[in-house]
Length: 246
Length: 364
Image 1 (cartoon, rainbow over the protein chains, first blue to last red):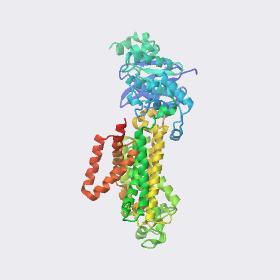
Image 2 (tube, rainbow over the protein chains, first blue to last red):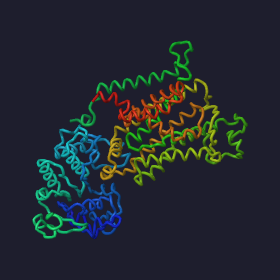
Image 3 (cartoon, rainbow over the protein chains, first blue to last red):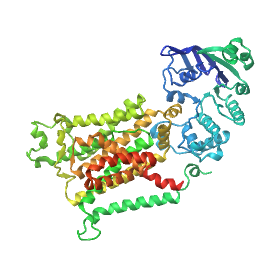
Image 4 (cartoon, rainbow over the protein chains, first blue to last red):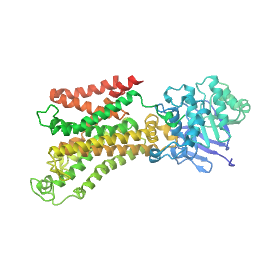
């Protein structure tokens, strides 16, 4: 694994019509690190992800992926650099099958002509099949994504992220609305992914964050309030005041 | 598990049945010009009217296919596709005008009648080259393609989608209509082009020419259908479907949505232009009325009635709605617009998947 930082945010601010969604936010994620980001509603978690993935341009500050400045690139370019994002609301392509959803996400040339000429090779098929078994959807390969359960859609989306072969995964509330068994499966899935890749998980569910067993960053009003182990932040007086105590 | 098994289940019996019906329909259509040569008393005789009217519908079906590629697959609801059709038609019309040569009413060796009438001394620069068939055919594809590229690039890059894009395309065709109505544009003003004499050395207005154009249209329709079918079956087709359903998500997968939509839109516009070029020599006239917004909206109704995103549905819709129109505009001309509007409302409410959904509904 390459040394140094994977993701580097320094002094990032985002202002929407005078409202400071992010306020001088700084965050460093190491290669292979699993990081949880928590914070009350409106703390800027989603805006932070938007800044990293090119959906929102920061008003000020530095956003770097490895050595690459991200602030001037569009979503597709950033995705191709190796940043995958899972949204809070699972968005998979309903009209396509599980297999086709994964095939679409598979790292391959992305232009129209390349897609027209695309032929599924043995290696690609093996990768898709391996991912399907990892996310437990092998049996559903031919089913349209529209008929999957909520949990299965979440896993399919995580599977699609894996197919992109990213160096950094941003995962927004992966267990919202999941059953306990599904939550446990998801925690294992994410912990298994980290190590090879850096993973940033945004989550509300503290039990789930505890299960991840990683460093935790607490955001509040657009900046970092506290950082450390789950026990450390849970005992931080300021954190208790703005978030946990409520 | 084999790859094919993962992708598409073996064609169902109904699918095969539908395919057989399609092939049969093409063969029946292909027989029309031949049956036209039978003596009029013969029971299988097909009238001149029927040949020319079905020839027109075939061109409309190509337009419907092109719209289905843009709307049904890529989710680009163009309310100005008639403009691409008309531009292809005008490019063909310019070629036909040049071929009239000295046979015009004023007998000028080069200038078309309307230019002599308007006092032109020489051919405007943009008319040069149109005497050459190959160049004219290139323009039939290039002009609509270029317009689609410019419009698409500006809109898709700025992420203009949905109803806003529809309004812009509608405004585009309206603006073109007003522009082509002007005499000083050099396209014959409100009279457009007519009085065509020949094409490829073949005098128009003979049953041979009608037959040849009919077959050219039918072959084009089959070719465009196969092209679209092929595209829909590739990964590119699935990217378009994904863009239609969740454009943003596709962006975060690393696909340039602008590029993919642009490719489909330009291809679709060229197909529409080709349809227009086949249409003009068959109807013998092209004028700015072809740009009228109503035409583009009617094309959308064909696709919606047939069933969008199915290709076959678009063709079915073009034939059935135009068949109904041809019958009704002679039987009860005042009713047509009400029926057209009513049809659109009824299909949207009760047959969201169009006529083709009637068949598919049973299959599932």
